[in-house]
Structure formats: structure tokens, C-alpha cells
Image 1 (tube, rainbow, N blue to C red):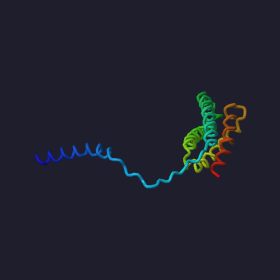
Image 2: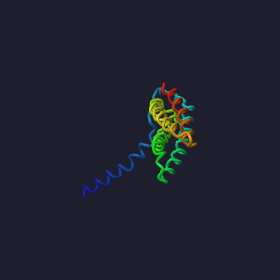
Image 3: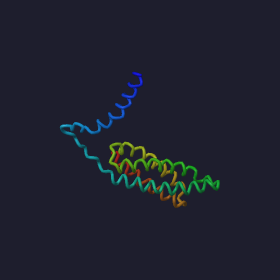
Image 4: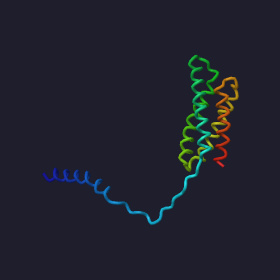
Length: 146
């Protein structure tokens, strides 16, 4: 019987401990240093534009691949990389994350590689638009990365 009482008491203590801890006010630090977040508005904007252009290009490339036209295969791979990277960079830059400049270096490399693939297909409107967006995004990334 003692064992059962102990387990019951232990369970009751576990259930009530969070409630009593929540009612106590945490100690306020004497002085808290507040670091302002840097604004990366231009970086967020250019990466968002590149993201949208990448999605359009990827949609076009996948449609071509569905018809067994492999001319846009390299473009599809580059666009997929850019979509993933620019989406993440847009989120980091929009939040003013201190990791945005370091990540922008990687995105700049991806955008420059994608721009080279897009330059191979100037007759495809989506590829041309993505190439221009990648060039702009790479330039903005270079500025942010320092």
C-alpha cells in the first residue's frame, strides 16, 4: 500500500508543480542589453523577387520535362536550388536575423550559377526573367555579405 500512495503523491506533485511555478513571477534582470536587429529590407525584397521568378521558371521547366523535353533539365535543377535558398534568405532577412549576411554569401553563389544556366536559354521568357532576378539578388547578397 505504501508504494501506491507514494506513486499517487508523486503524480499529484508532478501535476501541480507547473501550476505553482507559473504563478511565481520570474526574477527581472537588473539591466538587459537590447541589441537592435539590422534591417535587410532590400535583401528580403530581392530574394523574394528571385523566389517568385524561380517558382515560375521551375513550373515551366517541370512542364517541359513532363513532355520529355530535357532542354530545361539544368534550368530545373538550378531553379529548385534558388527557390529553396531564396525562400530561406527572404525569411531570415525579413526577420533581421544576424545569420542573413553569412547565408547571403551562399545564396549569391547559387544565384550566379543559376544565372549562367538561364543565359543558355534566352528564348524562354521564364528563364530570362529568372536570370535577371538572380543577377539582382546576387548583387544584393554581395552588398549584405560585405
